[in-house]
Length: 238
Image (cartoon, rainbow, N blue to C red; front, side, top):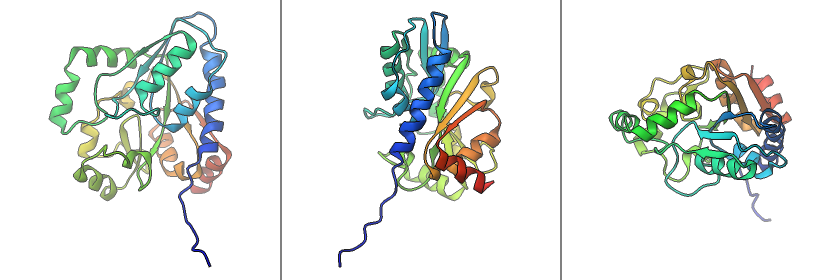
């Protein structure tokens, strides 16, 4: 008898469905030729949005990274997503010239002092709209791949009850910004800087329920785009 293969679902169909839903929203707010600055996070759901966007042309759109990037080429990185959205719409992209995570709080503070970083973050904080995704803190999740974190940072995430991140800010299940060193090492736009933005959170797959609820409890989201399995899992977890 062949052994049973157990695999972790990748939720690609759910992410694609949510990405297409986000495309409809983006096409609505970006239509015409009105100048609009849109902050962009990272992740596979937003990448699916960029993959499926059609029919939107506005050279006055600006897509700006809300967070730093990773060192390897990736279609889920915020810079890549911004560039693809700008290319498809005729707009432009502003990329944050910073890593997703610095080695220390001191290193992050130095990065934030750089002129190009300051200018990009100023534009990001002034965005009228933002499109973000959520990341899980579990083995097999995108956050735990490709050596993003040091062993000490990984241990801290696992030991301190962190359920996931949104744009480089890590949360506990009650919606609080986790009191961990890692949250002082990520150059990004913080929740308390999003008050004037219309914030849309995208997520796909039932395994995102805990972090989705945490981000909702954090209180900065205006709109939530989910697939049915995640919506049901989130309701069941309340």
